[in-house]
Image (spheres, rainbow, N blue to C red):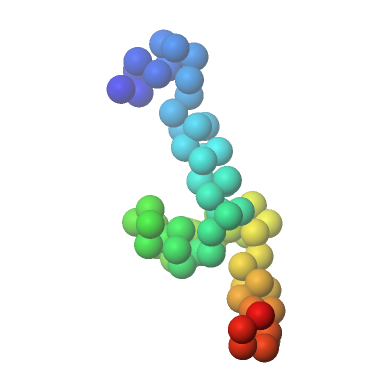
Length: 68
């Protein structure tokens, strides 16, 4: 499959990295890890590289009044 994609001008490794980078901006690291079967530390590294700081978001959500 990889060879066929390369013949079409598609680099599977770069495409995978791009997809992981995008997902890391949209999902918390724990969800990313569970969904893709990554170790949590790997998911956190991807998230930090993508500048998706879900830790700050989770902290803000936890301080919101219930129902908002």
